Amino acid sequence: MRFFSDNAAPVHPAVFAALEQANTLDTAYDGDGWSRQLDARFSDLFEADVRALWVPTGTSANCLALAALCPPHGAVVCHHDAHIQNDEGGAPGFYTHGAKLLLGEGEGAKLTPASIAAVLDPIRNDVHQLQAHAISITNATEYGCVYTPNEVAAIGHLARERRLGLHMDGARFANAVAHLGCTPADLTWRAGVDALSFGFVKNGGMSAEALVFFKPELAAATLYRRKRAGLLLSKGRYLAAQIHALLDHDLWLDNARASNAGATMLAKAAGERLVYPVEANEVFLRVTAAEAEKLRAKGFDFYDWGPGEARLVTSWDHQPDAIRPLAEAIAAL
Image 1 (cartoon, rainbow, N blue to C red):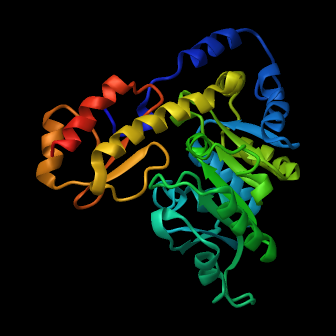
Image 2 (image 1 turned 60 degrees about the vertical axis):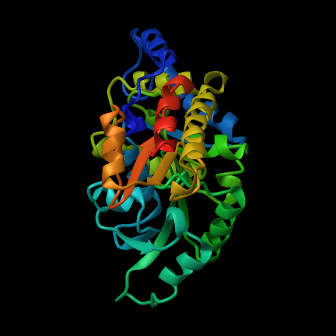
């Protein structure tokens, strides 16, 4: 009955089993066997040599990535509805020691080369104006819309032309890959992405996210930044173990497919009420305050999302029998 956030979803049993297996004496910090295997594990997944670091939150993954791509005197272009702009409490400026976010436009919280150029072009190349050093995109976006490999590649091409780094906030990266049916490589480094925040907490994890660098040299200074920020956990093996568990047998994809399927069920019931196409596990629909109250009176829990809109989020553990009553209630409004 609760559809307000996949952050609140249960932890997958395989993750608990992995934590139990990791509950033994090993080297501290990131010197343990689980942590030391992450580079190879993600290199296999992305079909390229990468560096992968565990971090405890998506905010830290995003902001450590931006700090690797942008100096304190620089700027990062992102959408005006991006999570790093609206929901991270100023952390990008904190981690980068002063870099600024420059805000672009686009339907469904998706940037385009044209909307990025509209931000960049007015900037004079002199010391009196803040110079952009990176672009950050979110896949899937804050409105559940998915960038295709071609769309990412177009932005990647612009980034290379302008000599900018490209970061992808992948808090729901699994949902984007599951929707597209593409390879993780096609959606990231082959399209020009330099750093990826790979989300696991929303997808069955407990307290672990991955920061993946497709330019491995970016990881060197990030190791020091992670420590300085208080994010180098002494028992890092428990974070690494969660990530391995979700990568095993493509559990991360299975979980994402399940949550996407639940959102599709709700989308079919919502019909013309949909505000955005449903391409991941978020559903935004038009409802009046009275209609929202009707749904809540039946026991359904969700967020209001501005006047006349609601956001419903499905999770990896939502079974069709649990989603069907909400779909029927929406259809009956």
